[in-house]
Image (cartoon, rainbow, N blue to C red):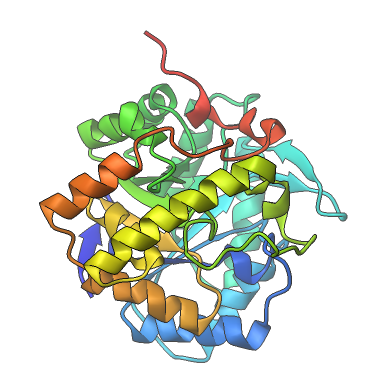
Length: 334
């Protein structure tokens, strides 16, 4: 397994990470035994980066990871945790909290659920508009000094926030959506991260399964949040699935699946980028791992770039209510 370092100050991890969210939340029911078996298979394949959030299943995902790791013995695993999202007992969203006292509280619960003494990368899930980013990062930096956290990350924030945060404490990586049909970071955010020596952990590399080659119009599970996402609705879905057919054609010419080409394209955008795959079944993980064997030539990358230019996707990444909390979606100031 190829290794990549997260920025100039972050840890060295596998070139592919495993996003564990779908094993506990958002994508409908998941099989617990299959989820654990998938984590085991990922570790056996050399994946060392596991990504989670304390609000994924309200702690369920962290406990699932603990159970999976406990049954395989010591491994060289890096765990990345997002915090700050507030949810009600009915799973509704209640906002974000990044006050210093709240951070200590969130961290305490995560350490207990994961059964570890320190978290490798700790990051606010979104920018809390009520708390200056300097206060948030300063509080996490104190926890770094105390040995509870090893590295600090960010998630879905824009360049101005990245710069302000990095002045307080070195940022290891920015976790943000990046895929063939979500290329927004290329205009400004990616340049800022590279200037500052901050890595990228890219989630949504398959656009939540939309460009995996496995999504179909008749797929309908109300418990799956994707059915409320703009890109999965109505005419938007028709237009986006037409893009998948273009990807399927290109993938066939290269000799890979659409998912493998989509993952390989993100990985090819720089050694400072680590794609996160959200596989929750072993067969999907096996397919994703196959992307590591795909070498895209300059002509392949050119063809993909022309077929999927920035802004080609129909529909926004999230609903408007969620986009309002995403600092990364705000245009950079002059």
